[in-house]
Length: 190
Image (cartoon, rainbow, N blue to C red; front, side, top):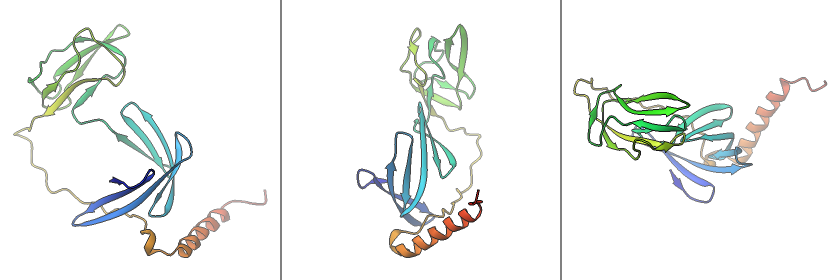
């Protein structure tokens, strides 16, 4: 993806050996709503951000996007760091305890989500951390017993035609037909 203007982007999508591009224009109405134009075709947009998670709804279809870096373990709530049983450089098995937090007089044990090596620990025992604060950065360790996965399947994306390939009058006529069929489904005389 490349930014080509203040609100314009060019997105390249690889599909096998082919590379398809989409010109995207973002038009914000307010902090949470707007519209995106993909190759000239409009789509409604609704967004919300909760910590490192972005919730994006495009034409009524919800998507959850994380801007978090892989391997970062974050605090699930405001808490006090009570114990850090692993040191930087230590290897841990999946499910092993890596940090203990106390919140509202309850202890929570956070466990390694996968076999890993502790790469960084920016907190220490006694630290007060807010929700979403990075507690540790884990580096995955290859599991020798893991089965090798086959080739990755490619997915065909049905992108709208580029602006230059569908004349504006044709796009307008298609839009009017869509609007007409939508209105025919409503009882206008009420």
